[in-house]
Amino acid sequence: MTPQELDYRLEIDSNDCAIRILLNDFEVFTYYKKGPVYLILGIGEYLKTTNNKLTISIWPATNKTDLFDKGSFCKVTLAARNRYKTDQLRAFSGIHYYPKDNIEYNISEQSVKKIGHINQQFGKSVGDVKFTYYEKHLFYALNQEFDINPNYKVWNWETSPTLASKIGYDTPLPPKQREALFSAYQELWNALNKKDLKKLEQLFHEQSLECAEANGTTPERYFKTNVLLDILKDPELSLAPLSFKNVRYYYSLDRKLVNLLDSKASLIHFYRNNKKDHYVSFYPSYRYDGKKFVISR
Image (cartoon, rainbow, N blue to C red; front, side):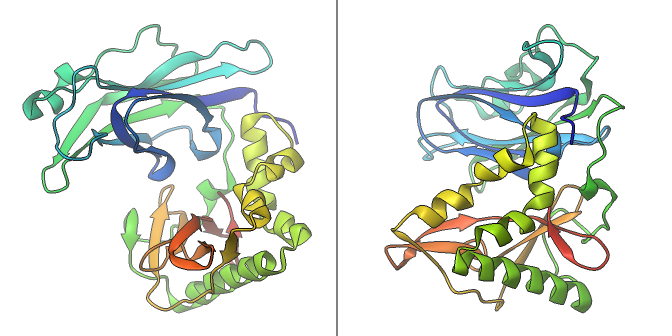
C-alpha cells in the first residue's frame, strides 16, 4: 500500500458554537461545549472527485436560543497538500461563518466571509453556501458543495451498491441484505465480546487499509488508533447485549454505507458501570459487496 499523494484535511476553528460537521452526510466531528475549539482532521477517505457536500449544523453553545453571543464564529476550511512535497496545507473551499443575534443576518450571505488564498489545484467550491434555519429545533444548517482533484483515489464504497432511497434515516433493507447485515453485526459483537483482537483487525481490514492510504500511515498503525481498543481496555465499560428489535437504519456516503441504531444509541454500545442509562456508542458503517457487508468506515 502506498499513501495517496494528495492529503485532504478539514481545519476547524470555532468559538462559542455547538457544531456537527458532515462530509457527504457522514458525521466527522461534533462539539457542543462553550468556548474555543481548534483541530485538523484527515478526511480523504470520505471524498470522491465530484459532487461532494460539506454540511455544518450550528447553534449557540448555550443551547437556549438561536441567537449567538458576540464573538461567535465557526470557520471550517477544506484544505490539501502534496504530502511528498510540502507540509503546508492550501485552502480550496469551506465555510467561514460569523453569526450574530439576528436570524435574518444568520441566514444571509453577509454572515459568511470569503476564504482567501484559494488553491484550485486541489479542488474548488461548486455554487454558493446554502442556508437553512430550523426554527423548531433552534439551529442553522449550512451546505457547500465542492469537487476535488480528478485524479484522486476511488474508494471501495463509491462503487458499492446504493442501499436506500434517501440519505439519513430510511426504510429497512430488503430481507436478503438485512440478514447479511445482521450477520455482520453479530460477527462484530462476538469478536468484541471475546475481546478477540486478531478477529477485530480482520473485520476492520478495509477501513484500516483505505483510511491509512488516505492519511499517510500504515493499516497496522491505523488500526491501533481505533477507539474500540481503548473501550475494550476500560474496566468501567461492558458490552451491551445485541438485539435487532426496533432497529433504525442510517445511510450515508451517497447511500452506500449503513449503520444500525436502537431507540437510544448505536446498536453496538457499552454500559458504563453496568448502568443502562450511561453508555458509550460505537458506529461502524458497512458497505455491501454483493454478498456480504464489510466495515468500510
